[in-house]
Image 1 (cartoon, one colour):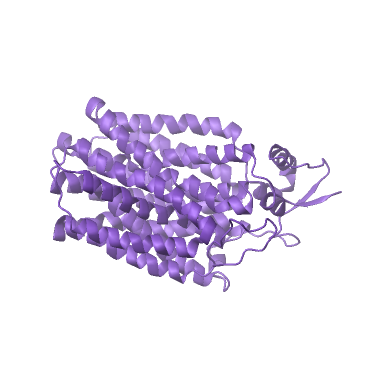
Image 2 (cartoon, rainbow, N blue to C red; image 1 turned 30 degrees about the vertical axis):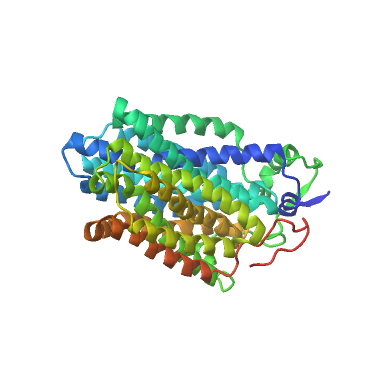
Length: 453
């Protein structure tokens, strides 16, 4: 009987069309995650006048979603390691879709916040499993790009949400946004349930699922005999144990875990200071119309898509340390430039251009952070590692609306953008702590070892 190390086989294998389609399927779930995640911030300028309340009345409702995402990220990562990344991912999609649909029928801020909290559990559970799944479908030299290309779909989904708000909101009302945002993910989840396979590395640890693994590897272009015996290199010869959070603080991971936790905390905070408050800030401080206010967040997300893809490509050339630290420093400078700009709804070119550039840098650092976390942890604790880091980051995510709101109340738009700069400076310091950064892969021979940069 032939023994096959599934990790080595995939890491040193080809980058096939089938694998690209798997990444596309995974990415589609995260596009819809991004859509549902950003529907409420875009809908607030429409809901507030209808309900006769100020935009600030929705801060608690906006904060409940990230609290749910914190719980979902932690639960989703652990469930992914124990029961499979695919099952955890698609289960999360169905959960957030159904709860998003239910939001279309609420009539109070309290119920809006409650449903947003429960939907957040599903939203948070999707991302760590998508990152782990994408990283385990592809060869090592394509991993940072595949993971980032998957997670970049968060701002892409945000762009879709802002576009929907600008088109559907004025024509059909805010409730239609949540109806569409709920129905589409449900349909996609049931389609992907039949098309998307489980992680090959996860299947290798389950002997009863080896026939399924053989089928997947053959679809990837590998010549696998029927009587093959599988091992996964990082766990071969050792009994498999359940992943725990304590594993992340073992001596070999402790420094990287602390750096990652702080990076996710402050980077998610600054991104959600933007996501949750840009439309309301433009509406209240710049007197923009609701549709035009959604346009500001739209440009933040467009920049995020461009920046994240560009960041992933640069990481392959120079590694993640130089790339992520450079983008963080540039975000600090751009945020300070924005702090000195005047909000004028009749002359928006310069402001929207800076939203594009600065939003691109903020999102690029955040999305590439998932690839960094997936690189730091080995297969047996990867979902737990990514999920726990994201869950800790969700605390910053949940506090973002209050931190950003405080800066806005005390300093107006200059104080608001200065807040961006301060938070990104802390992200820079946190990323510098991480030792096991993604190495340069472009130009490295397939079999060559890759040291940390």
